[in-house]
Image (cartoon, rainbow, N blue to C red):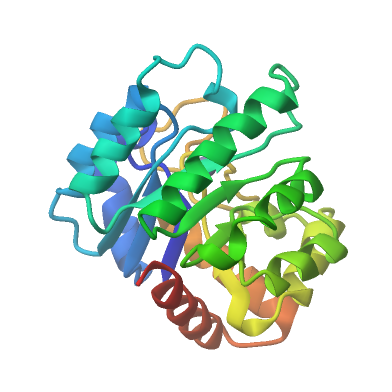
Length: 262
Ligand SMILES: [Zn+2]
């Protein structure tokens, strides 16, 4: 299985690396795309990029919409320098966010566009965040999509119309543990509607702990820490929703991840 979106540098996962690695290996995990979110975590993301994990690690660098305020003036130069030095890195997690409502759309969009331009310039795939902003995000993407080598909408939660637009633009749609909640009707319908060759699965570890997920030993936090070992639950749920076997879902999503990340 390929976990198309996680944040392995997060201190909550770093503290329990042995434990989640053991669980993830048991479930047959073969790859993870792990993304930084601001200049503050790019160095930690980079250190992990060179760690000898027992699976393939694709690293991403970018400014998440939650962190577009108070960026150092040279953030773009810093990002470009890392991208040049890490030839297999992708650009992400970047995007637009309508959940937190703390930053203007103008600022979010301007930081997003600059990073998309960088992705085009260096021919890198992009990992996108679009919580409560999928429609807006698609509008921005239209001017970049055909120049990008690929892009994915992580933890997709938009409408069926937006889903169609994203696949028409050549993007991939990734589903997280949210689909394990039977009341998440909109997301579950979307997970059923995605064309097979556009489908990905993810955990978004350490966030989005799925209903029925495995907690890590010694995890005493109120909000359990999600980890890549829970990807099998997302895979099994998607298999049920699409009336396929987990093995077929694994095969489909691993093939799609390879096509996207190279
Ligand atoms: Zn994320």
